[in-house]
Amino acid sequence: MGRVALVTGGSRGIGAAISKALKDAGYTVAANYAGNDEAAAAFTAETGIKTYKWNVADYDASKAGIEAVEAELGPIDVVVANAGITRDAPFHKMTPDQWKQVIDTNLTGVFNTVHPIWPGLRERKFGRVVVISSINGQKGQFGQVNYAATKAGDLGIVKSLAQEGARFGITANAICPGYIATEMVMAVPEKVRESIIAQIPTGRLGEPEEIARCVKFLVSDDAGFVNGSTISANGAQFFV
Ligand code: CAA
Image (cartoon, rainbow, N blue to C red; front, side, top):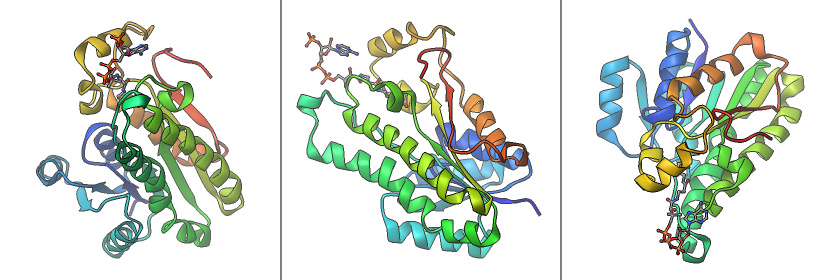
């Protein structure tokens, strides 16, 4: 039986492409989702991948959800912390609630996802952690003080986890997608989106599958020495 992989936010957008790519590569995949039951049911019907509902912003719910996945599928070897939200607004208009929602989901959500799984990875001396950060965690973005803060924070998480996990056979890496053709990017006002696409030398949005292929590499045995790194996949929009 293949290794078990958990993908948070794994039934839509980039997460859905990751779930499918890992299943195709032989992993037993659990796709977490927060709220959209209809999309999750359609995803399972289409792919055969089981979906599990909990809110990554809630530690106790995450821990219980992870226990349910492990009881059904076996110990989790691979965790892809992908779940994320936007609440965009220029800073002078951003509310404390918009700040908190994004921090709770995108940053604390990574803690809540990896922390319950981490002891098992250490015990079994193998693990792959991938956190989906963002180009906007690297460069910042007008209207995304909250989101950029979380995505920059994700990079600190993986660099620290990499150092703690290395001697246990665990790697932790981040991917910074640029602008990818998902509902999240399509929700950006059209004029703004067009101006962003004009800044991408490749001349188009990325495809979710292009991020999924990066994940597939990072979780493979071939990537055992790639640890604490950040893969940028942004069509040459930004270099670090
Ligand atoms: N740089 C400089 N000025 C900008 C600007 C920019 N990038 N964007 C907007 N402005 C200006 C506007 O022209 C406007 O100027 P005027 O007042 O002189 O007309 C002013 O800033 C702001 O206008 P508003 O007060 O009307 O702003 P708003 O309340 O409508 O909010 C916004 C605007 C929500 C931030 C909107 O610009 C927006 O959605 N921007 C996109 C943010 C973005 O890129 N989000 C990414 C979502 S996808 C994602 O996050 C995935 C990923 O990882 C990449």
